[in-house]
Length: 134
Figure (tube, rainbow, N blue to C red):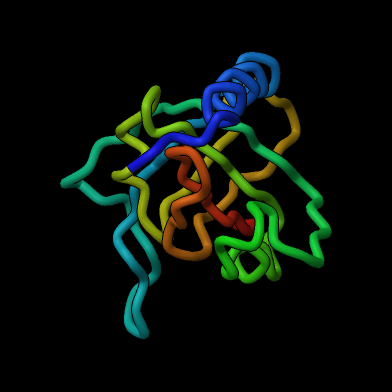
């Protein structure tokens, strides 16, 4: 499959955004809640840290990643924040599941967040996580 000319530029820009804006977050895996019990820490998965761009207060009417994907706007519906993680640098982001808790390590006065929907693959090897207030 031929590679588009802009892909190398896109990769450089994405790396620059990560360098400037990515921050460390701690992921605390949870066992899913059901009608009989609340969510609890998952003993089979230990907490870990990853880095990604954490964006709060997103008001998006259209698609964040172009017309090739039609579900990015639904990813953000009702979300308090979006965490975008580069899989090449942080492959353990694949272990994040819906219901896990996310804490911004470097920011003060940021509430605990919950992964509110399954992760979505975004453009150029990234995962997007919709986060809601815990």
